[in-house]
Length: 185
Image (tube, rainbow, N blue to C red; front, side, top):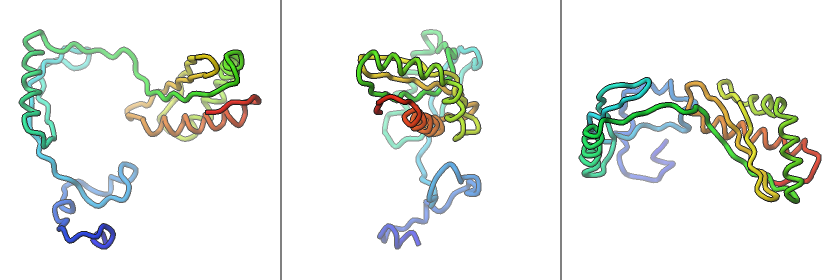
């Protein structure tokens, strides 16, 4: 089937040989046909002095770029000589930031007040598209007639880029439909 679709005489035997269970992939990849093999080298150790991770760690890197791992090794060695990498989590949010175009700055301010008044409904609408994404706040940044909204989500253990994008899109569509003034995105 795949040979007909991509018009190739090249053998695809290597992408169809893999050790992962393809039954776990739905929701992670569409139109799955196989896997790519990329060389993996080891870099490190890197010294981490964090709240949750402490110690020297080796990092596997998948690359075909010559000298990349050697370059990482030099950086890791230098950072270790300087005492290591100190890390902390300052905040844990995934954000999306649509802009709404109002007639003028006054209308943008009025729009911002309406967003505040309707936050609970917007939150409810946004969260209809996700099980793990939770809208925690909408920050406002007015610039002239433009109102930039920053939707901040928690996503549990998921990275959440797609879920937050989808939730913000649904919320923005609801905002446009329900705000009784003239705005554009």
